[in-house]
Image (cartoon, rainbow, N blue to C red; front, side):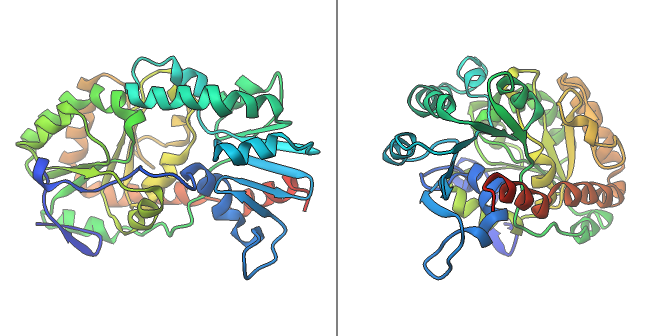
Length: 348
């Protein structure tokens, strides 16, 4: 048995799969992270007369200004697009077109992106007066045609201190994690040889992931790998802050889809108390002070193996590095800045 948060959970393997993420409809993670977490006091509820009305799980309005986040129920989107809003805002946090054309993404995920592209993405984008994104790369794509803004995500969760690193000083297990979804599969597959060699060599290392694929399943037969099964976003956002990890892996191959990603993982890693190890070519890598607030490495799996081995050989340093990585996450996870942005967008 291994401890995860406050609950006892079985160790992994195909028969020991744990509760994981991503399933079901309703409110999207994008809606919470880029709007609702920060703007909750402004939303109109049964018990509160806030200035912003909820039109659907991912759609909102205040007066003659409306917002759609990524996608919503077809009837909701149809009603919104049929009205003559003075300002229609579209928040999209992925390069949908690049994802459809990316052969490295899982076929089922590409199919979902294709469906979104054909049914809602282009119609909403065509009607929108303002586009809000999570990265400069994605903003640059839309800027010639639209008024564009870039905002950072906000996690409504405490960012823990480093007490969980104390166990490393007494010979405790080192907990690795990859907080990705199926859209990150090719990135994780690229460094899988490094992970396999490191975990074979260092038996006190445990690795947790929130999705799976055949190569990972094979490794889980003989190594300490915990594979989470599907869980809704609502369940995930409640469970994740209870988790604690020491090192979070975030490989990102040089694809157009990856280069449009936001800084979200820099904050999400802080939510679980982890120091991040990032691809040096990731567009937000400049925010990380290598060997200070995290680690940077090239995309070759041999480089990942060498870097992981070096980190594991000096694991007692992770707690001091975590102090700087947490400070970075706290600085980026700015509720007031996001709330001020939306107050201005809705002209409140």
